[in-house]
Length: 531
View 1 (cartoon, rainbow, N blue to C red):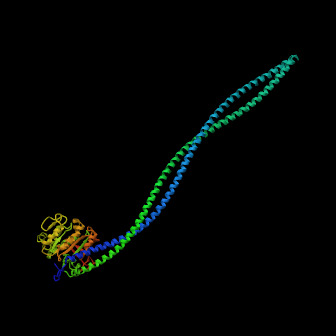
View 2 (view 1 turned 90 degrees about the vertical axis):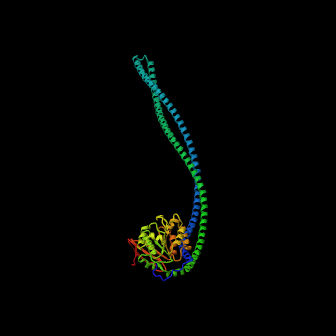
View 3 (view 1 turned 60 degrees about the vertical axis):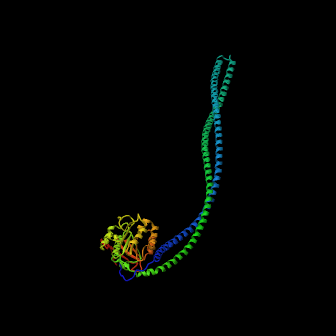
C-alpha cells in the first residue's frame, strides 16, 4: 500500500476535513467575490453613464417638447390660413359663376343684335334693289326726254313747250340719278359699317364664348382648389390635434425621464454603498482565509509526511511524490479526450491489491471490461473483490448488473450506500467519487451536501478520497470547490494530439510541471514520462 511503511497515518479529525472543505469553499467565494467586485465596478460605471444619459435625455425631451409646442402653434396658424383660403376659394367660385351668367347674358344679347343687324342688311338690300329700280327709271326717263327732244325738233318749233317739258324731265331724271347715286353711296357705307359691326359682334361672341370656357375651367380649378384646401385644413387640423397629444405625451415622458434620472442617481449612490460594503467584505474574507489557512497548516504538514497510495501508473507516482496521500483528498480534473477511465481502473485495482478497499462511483463511460482487465493484471477479479467487501460500486447510471455490493442509486440513497460501505469494509477505503455522476444523479446542491455528510463520521481519517471532475460537465464553481479543498490536484489535458498530466497542488511532488502521457493497450494502460 505504501512506498514507506514507517510513517504513521496522520489522525485527520472531522474538524480537519471540515476546515479543508471550508478552505475550498472560501477559495470559491473569494474568486466569486473578485468577479462580483469587477461586475459591481462595471455596473457602477454603467450606472454613472446611465445617470448622465438620463440627464441628457431629460434635456433632449424638454427641447423636443418645446419644439412640438412650436409645431402645434404653427399647425394651428396653418389651419386658420387654410380655412381662410378655403373661404376665399369659395367666394372666387361664386364670382366666377356670376361672371359666367353675365357672359351668357352678353352672348344672348349679342345674338339678338346680330339678328337685328341681319334684318338691317336685308332692308338695305331691299333699298338697294329699289335704288336700282330708280336708276332704271332715271335711265328710261333720260331716254324718254331724249326722244321727246328729238320729236320736238321734228315739229319745227311747234312743240316748244314739249321741249321744255322734255328738258325738265331730263333734268329731273339727272337729279334722281344723282340722288340715287348718293343714296347708293350712303347705303354702301351703311353696308360696310354693318358688315364691320357684324364681324365685331361675331368676334365678341367668340371671345365671350372663350372667356366663358376659361371662367368655367377656372371655376373647376377653384372647386378642386377648394376641396384640396378643405382637405389640407382637415389634415392640418388632425396634425394639430395629434401634435397637441404628442406634446402632452412628451411632457409625460419628460417627467418619467426626470424620475429615471433620479432613480439612476439613486442607483449610482446605492452601488457606491455596495462597493464600499464589498470592499469590507473582501477584506474580511481575506482575514477568514488567513485563519483557515493557519488552522489547516498543521494537517497539511502532517500529510506531507503521510504514507502514499500508489496509482499503479508508471511515472505518475514519481510526479505525485509517491502517489495519493493516505488520509488526504485528491482531485483529478480532465477534459473529455483524456484516458481518465484507464487511470481510475488502474488506481482501483492497485489499491485493492495493496490491501485497501475501494468505493467506486464509475463515470458513465467506464465499462466493466476495462475495470476487470486492470484487476486481472493483479491476480484479482472484480467479482471476487465485490464478494470479499474489497470493492463497492455506487451505480449512478444503472449500467451495472445487480449483485452484492453494487448499489443502484435509482433505488437507494447515496448516504445509505455510503453507510453500508463503511459498515462492511474491513480495510481503509479509497473513495473514488465521480462528481459529474453525482451532479447528474442528485444535482449540484445535493452533491455538495453529500460531501459534508461523508466527512461527518461516515469515513475514517485513514480513508483516502479521490474525486474525478470533468471540466466540461461539472459547473465551474463546484469544480473549483473540490479543487480548493483538495490536498493534491492533478489535471489531465489533451492538446495538439498529446495527452499530458500536471500536478497543480500537493504538499509533496513536483507541482506546476506538465509531463506527457503515453496510452497503452493493456494494464497499466498509461505511462508518464519525464521530458
